[in-house]
Image (cartoon, rainbow, N blue to C red; front, side, top):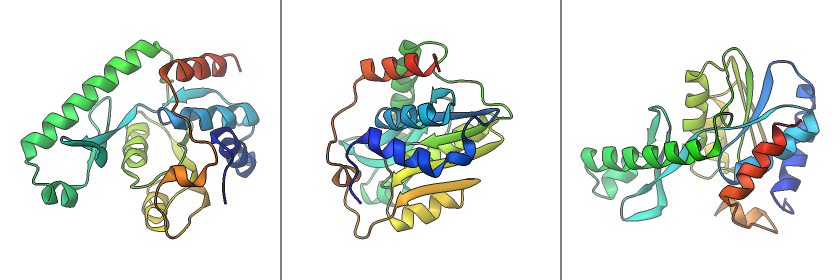
Length: 212
């Protein structure tokens, strides 16, 4: 399956999430940045509020594009200890990298405004991204939402490798994934259009979401 773009992926996910249309105490949370585009499409189709899931990939100190885990803004840290040991990273280096990413994430969230992260206590959270590969960011997001009091967590993504999908499905109350291809190389390979999403676009999507 090839998705046209993130909007197309979100609309297809919304079709699979129809039982949540107009559901009370339910909201859609996107993982920045690309996941917010997907989340906005779901929120529009299902008539639900939109927000941010405050998580960020943790890259290797000497290779930021290589994911060794993920963090949220409050203390959740998910790490690939096997890969970290293979890279020769010490515990102190991992802690420093996580702290830097968390500080950057907090500053980024502050610039978005106070309403970017909605109250979750007792609510159903539909968590989404534009796809998952290692699954670390999604895992951090799931833990973050539960710590914030979400009563039920639904993870909905357009594409994931089969092994990652199995791990994530066991961590949530409901898992929706449209395709689990094998072999799996990169999320962007399953989209015809894969542009970078800017901070300004995220702000605009959140502002539009708050007017639903």
